[in-house]
View 1 (cartoon, rainbow, N blue to C red):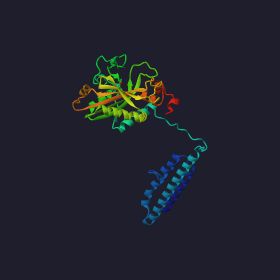
View 2 (cartoon, rainbow, N blue to C red):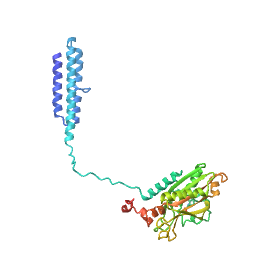
View 3 (cartoon, rainbow, N blue to C red):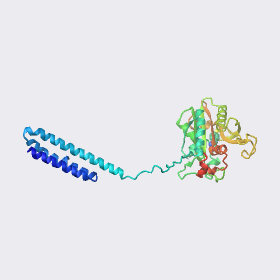
View 4 (cartoon, protein in one colour):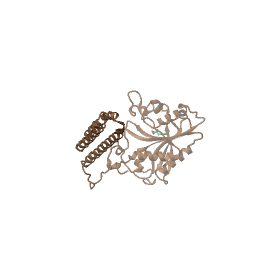
Length: 340
Ligand code: PHE
């Protein structure tokens, strides 16, 4: 009985080793495993014979079983390794002398850079950057900002209305309202973003452009705060030598309203083509927030007041980088974009 068992084990092992030497793929190897040490394999099928052996033979038989199993397992791993190696050597060789691949670096669009730069300057003065929707309702873009019903900017000739009665915002001032509706004073925000107006495109007008809005509401905010904020901005963006001046103006949402000019950065204020020989560049619309606007958002104008300002970002970037046509910002011409 023992002899018979040992012979069978030897046969199965030799057979398995021979088959594995011929194995060409994963499937061949698995088949050998299933046929021998698998759950319904030949070795497994022999184990009941063990029980029938006389007690003195059991030790030898057990040893023989273990040896056979180990041998087959070793042969299986060897076959797997051989297969892997041959797969590797079938791979095409790598030519290490080939030049590397170039990954051209992208750049931030000059307008995005301008937005970042402005936000950073205002952030240092404590202004938080927020954004608002480009599709606005009439309340936020006009009504709450105290724009009279007859105001020309409401005319569909000037503003893009959507079929549902909403509109493409014409100014970032709408974000003033959205912010104050959500937040109690104090408020100190800037909001850069795209605005839309029905203009005929030329070198200084497009159907859309970018503005940045500023709003500061607190107790005891004065015109002096507005002036120092704008002066600080001018000196950080254009340089310390830049002067600012303020002229009376009109906006429905500020009272008093003013326009802030920066001394011309091209000619230093002497007069040139860019400043139309005036020595000054009109940059910012601003003013003290109209008490009616504060009431519209539920603030008490007896308790808090503040200032607001807004200016065009294309114009700012054009002056700083000596660009004479605004359309170039949206042409996607790499020769232009790569200069920034
Ligand atoms: N919204 C104004 C414009 O588009 C600019 C402005 C903003 C003026 C805030 C005063 C205060 O011209």
